[in-house]
Length: 132
Image (cartoon, rainbow, N blue to C red; front, side, top):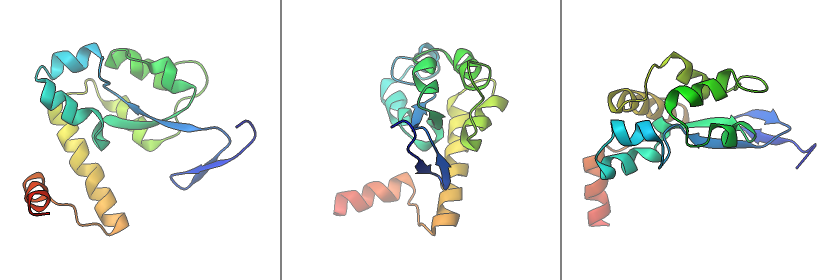
């Protein structure tokens, strides 16, 4: 789509934007930091583990470890990611479960506030689904 504009998160871009899972299914650190496969799977595609990237940066990040991905996001070819959600990654030394839980709560809180959402906790959501 060369030359076409795409509106993402309120900003207009000439290029496409992808969402990158910081820790993907095959990332070495991900398996080490989340040895339990069910817990690992539950975090892979959650908001806390996702960052927007330019479509060309996403393949460069691939399934590398966390430190290598940070280099791709901020020091690789081209410019650093302009997205605040991606820039948050720069301040982190690791992408561990406790940090992800805090990030998830913060990001969901932002969405609740700005989109006027009511977000159920996990237990309430399961009960609602079971009654459904």
